Amino acid sequence: MAIRAVTEVELETYWEQGVVKLPGLIDGYTATAVLRSLQHQLDNPSEWLLTGTHQSDRCFGLGDPTLRSYLLDPVQGENAARAMRSTRAQFYFDHVFAFEPNSPLDEHYWHQDQPYWPVEGEHIVSFWLSLVSCTPETSALKFVPGSHRDEQFFRPKGFDGEPLDDDLGAFAEHAIDAASQFRSEEPPAFHEDPEGHGVLEFSYEPGDAVMFHSKVVHSSGGNNSPDLHRIAYSTRYIGDDARLTLRKGVFQDPALLPKADEPFAVGLPMTSRAWPQVFSFEGEPSGV
Image (cartoon, rainbow, N blue to C red; front, side, top):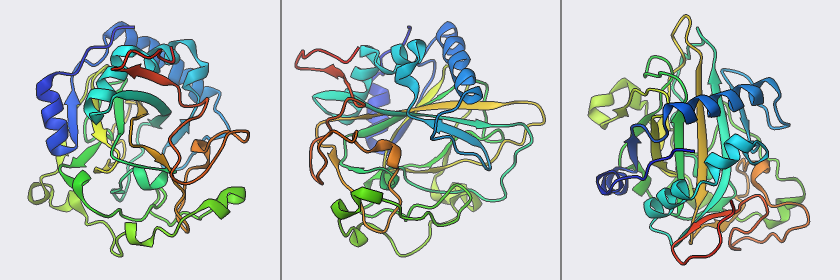
């Protein structure tokens, strides 16, 4: 597994903008192996499969030897810990996104990731890894730099732009009133004035990635290519200050809750068999 370390310049950019492109995060051989595993997953999806404007699946990688090696690689763990300025990094979850050729979108869905997840804190970072050549015309991510410093979230919606139902089930009693965390207005149409908003757009080759904060605003258009299949792999890591939470009246991804036999309470540290430690500056064993 060949993963490179992030540079000091890349870290400075990440801390300032909330996002930085990482050219050649993995080598071509590793990218081919990861792509093969992701294609197998898309052909044999988990219970968390979503379809619509695109296909996505999540929380499966630890069960695949190739993906597990990537997710729990100590170099990647140190990359995450350094980006978060955390003493350690835990794997949180993985997510594959696939756009078929000729799958354009009429609208961009600008959003932040963290409000979808039952977690809060600053130590939450994502790596979006492209496994194919990808441009803004074929659904590469776009970002609003500096938006990770905003005090409030935009309210979660589905990728079709429609509201998501709050379905917390047996965990509903744990949810907190988080109304003050959310804006009342919709996200601006940043793509209609990208220069005015400073929108960052990137193009990628297989093995390139982008590292971004869980609070930074981002989106993508559809895949306008007649023949290119876009596949990207998002992996998330958490650090020292990440804490469990459930926001009342807001969709919180049920795939990311602790196992049924594990403790749950708002404000607890992130401990679960599903979230192994990958790296620690204190020399503790990793989850590999």
